[in-house]
Length: 576
Image 1: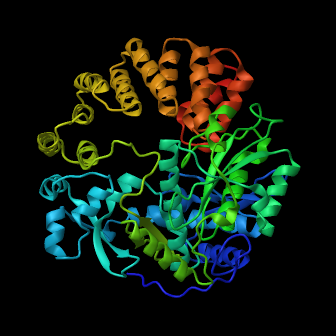
Image 2: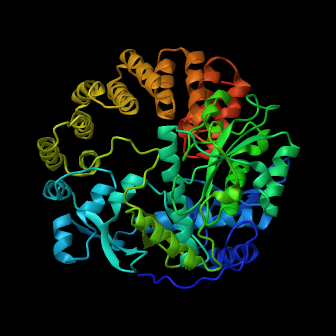
Image 3: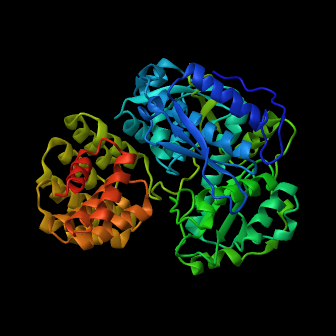
């Protein structure tokens, strides 16, 4: 178990670090080369230079691609060295995270009750687990539900008390995915980095849900030299921006920036809406502005970014609610700024504890690489991409339907159904079990039944999509489109819905209509190799061979294993 200690800052220009970014780049590249060959492909600068704000990517080598779903990571900073260091540490963070989860020796498999017997008095409380989904339930009933699954237990550090608690880590992973993972030059730097991201995602989720007035930050109060220069870079290029205080009473300041270029939007740029959290207001604002630069593609490249902590605006009037709040100076935001990162971290943990939140961290440092990496979580913090209807039964039901033996899973769903009066999620999970058992007809029936029982549009959309998916497995292509139309009407931010509808249209020979669906999927995720390949096939069958070949080549560059794309490309090149 890590022991946090004093960590004086050695670099404070645009971010607060234990060493300079130049030293980080030199040290981490050397370690990757010597200790983990094949993890790093290369780092390269990808911005056009228009804004004068550097953006880097780190490309995964074959060793990283073998365990990571991503192929590249982006890095930001007000200087070239900091942007490159950021991209490198993103790679370290992701590689460490997925390596940690790929090693079964890191975990003890146990039900919650078994864990209590293994580590008496040292297991995270049921109350904390219920807090993580903001649910009230009798602990005895919660224990019954928790005991339906054997969890991956691992020790976690309570940052404030310094005590070790054993936690079902996969419970927090299913809630937060890899949000909260971090890497740094020291454990303290890493934990503060990950904790800041958790605060950022939490306040953004709450503010986006409620859409209440938030304070507007006066740009003239952004007097920090680095921050003032970033603002000037935007203004000199005609970039309009709104700055908001998203701190929401948290110990750390969070600054949101909404930016757009009137000269290139919507043709070659997007409205970028993002946020940054740090130990002091100026550093939070710097993070937000450099994040905008990272996502925007210099507002001239046609880059499509994937929304995460905040939604993506497609029309300017969607941001109207951001200009209605009171005007405040930047220095009115909270701060935990100190010369020592450890002191900042402990001030944060104390402030969270005062609001009944507990900060935990798990050491996930890769044993060969030796660069500090952590997985951090705060029970009760929200995450925008998590359903607002979260519950213990919902997520345990999901695990049962996806991972537990089918007969045991069915019995477990019955137990959950008996405990919950509103068990709206049970028909959906019954459908998932039917899919696993190969009974696609029953699966389609259960997903259809589930649609109207769901509490929100996203859940209804997912049920409609799975109805269509189950039907597609039976080649009932003429029946799937109405369900996919419904799914997209309810939730138009899921690329999978457009993809499957495109496939259905392709099967019907409606290639031009199918192409529009694949384009819509790519507008959500422009790195989707399957959608690029499918779009290429549409163009091939429409007789537009040059466009077809270009899309198929791009798909194969991203995913060389797409054999159907390779076959059709070879046919095009052979004139077939």
